[in-house]
Image (cartoon, rainbow, N blue to C red; front, side):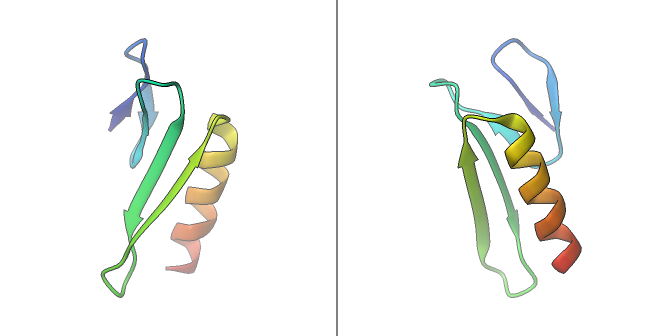
Length: 55
């Protein structure tokens, strides 16, 4: 579980970088690491949920 800069849990595969950008990543079924970076946490969560449904 990743945490934000204040120590709050963000969920599996999501973390916050020191510059404030949220960052999500996972490994797809082909072994390739997929990533998404955004200033908005909601955008990263939606992308990760959609990406994991496809896999």
